Amino acid sequence: APFEDNNSHLHRMNKLFPSLTGKGWRTAIKELDKKSKIRYGDLSDFLKEVTDARNQFLHEGDIFGIDKAMVENCIRNIEPLLNLFVELHNQYIYPLSRMN
Image (cartoon, rainbow, N blue to C red; front, side, top):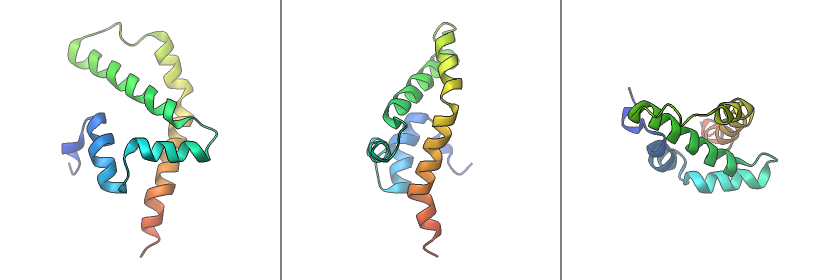
Protein backbone atom coordinates (compact mmCIF):
# COMPACT_ATOMS: atom_id res chain seq x y z
CA ALA A 1 0.00 0.00 0.00
CA PRO A 2 1.38 3.43 -0.88
CA PHE A 3 0.75 4.98 2.54
CA GLU A 4 1.45 1.99 4.75
CA ASP A 5 4.21 3.90 6.53
CA ASN A 6 1.58 6.47 7.58
CA ASN A 7 -0.94 4.10 9.11
CA SER A 8 -1.36 5.63 12.55
CA HIS A 9 -3.63 8.62 13.07
CA LEU A 10 -0.91 10.57 14.85
CA HIS A 11 1.61 9.89 12.12
CA ARG A 12 -0.86 10.92 9.40
CA MET A 13 -1.64 14.19 11.15
CA ASN A 14 1.94 15.08 12.14
CA LYS A 15 3.95 13.73 9.20
CA LEU A 16 1.86 12.83 6.16
CA PHE A 17 -0.51 15.83 6.20
CA PRO A 18 2.30 18.44 6.31
CA SER A 19 4.25 16.60 3.61
CA LEU A 20 1.20 16.81 1.32
CA THR A 21 0.01 20.31 2.17
CA GLY A 22 3.01 22.21 3.47
CA LYS A 23 1.06 23.06 6.64
CA GLY A 24 0.79 21.45 10.03
CA TRP A 25 -2.51 19.83 10.97
CA ARG A 26 -3.23 22.30 13.81
CA THR A 27 -2.38 25.29 11.60
CA ALA A 28 -4.72 24.06 8.86
CA ILE A 29 -7.49 23.43 11.41
CA LYS A 30 -7.10 26.93 12.89
CA GLU A 31 -7.33 28.46 9.41
CA LEU A 32 -10.51 26.50 8.67
CA ASP A 33 -11.95 27.50 12.06
CA LYS A 34 -11.72 31.16 11.05
CA LYS A 35 -13.92 30.57 7.99
CA SER A 36 -16.45 28.09 9.33
CA LYS A 37 -19.32 27.86 11.77
CA ILE A 38 -18.06 24.39 12.67
CA ARG A 39 -15.46 24.30 15.44
CA TYR A 40 -12.90 22.13 13.69
CA GLY A 41 -10.39 22.47 16.52
CA ASP A 42 -12.87 20.83 18.90
CA LEU A 43 -13.66 18.20 16.27
CA SER A 44 -9.96 17.44 15.83
CA ASP A 45 -9.59 17.04 19.60
CA PHE A 46 -12.57 14.68 19.64
CA LEU A 47 -11.09 12.70 16.75
CA LYS A 48 -7.88 12.25 18.76
CA GLU A 49 -9.88 11.17 21.82
CA VAL A 50 -11.80 8.58 19.79
CA THR A 51 -8.63 7.33 18.13
CA ASP A 52 -6.97 6.91 21.52
CA ALA A 53 -10.02 5.02 22.84
CA ARG A 54 -10.03 2.78 19.76
CA ASN A 55 -6.32 2.05 20.21
CA GLN A 56 -6.82 1.23 23.90
CA PHE A 57 -9.60 -1.16 22.91
CA LEU A 58 -7.65 -2.83 20.10
CA HIS A 59 -4.23 -3.01 21.70
CA GLU A 60 -4.98 -3.16 25.43
CA GLY A 61 -8.41 -4.81 25.47
CA ASP A 62 -9.97 -1.83 27.29
CA ILE A 63 -13.65 -2.63 26.77
CA PHE A 64 -14.81 0.27 28.94
CA GLY A 65 -12.93 3.09 27.18
CA ILE A 66 -15.66 3.57 24.59
CA ASP A 67 -18.84 4.51 26.39
CA LYS A 68 -22.33 5.33 25.14
CA ALA A 69 -21.63 9.09 25.16
CA MET A 70 -18.60 8.63 22.92
CA VAL A 71 -20.60 6.49 20.51
CA GLU A 72 -23.39 9.08 20.40
CA ASN A 73 -20.83 11.84 19.82
CA CYS A 74 -19.31 9.84 16.97
CA ILE A 75 -22.68 9.64 15.27
CA ARG A 76 -23.39 13.31 15.99
CA ASN A 77 -20.05 14.28 14.45
CA ILE A 78 -20.36 12.37 11.16
CA GLU A 79 -21.53 15.42 9.20
CA PRO A 80 -19.00 17.85 10.74
CA LEU A 81 -16.22 15.32 10.08
CA LEU A 82 -17.27 14.98 6.45
CA ASN A 83 -17.33 18.77 6.22
CA LEU A 84 -13.82 18.92 7.67
CA PHE A 85 -12.37 16.65 5.01
CA VAL A 86 -14.29 18.41 2.23
CA GLU A 87 -12.90 21.74 3.48
CA LEU A 88 -9.37 20.31 3.60
CA HIS A 89 -9.76 18.96 0.08
CA ASN A 90 -11.08 22.28 -1.20
CA GLN A 91 -8.31 24.22 0.51
CA TYR A 92 -5.32 22.03 -0.35
CA ILE A 93 -6.08 19.42 -3.01
CA TYR A 94 -8.43 21.14 -5.43
CA PRO A 95 -6.05 24.07 -6.10
CA LEU A 96 -3.35 21.56 -7.06
CA SER A 97 -5.66 19.94 -9.60
CA ARG A 98 -6.22 23.36 -11.21
CA MET A 99 -2.50 23.87 -11.81
CA ASN A 100 -2.40 21.57 -14.86
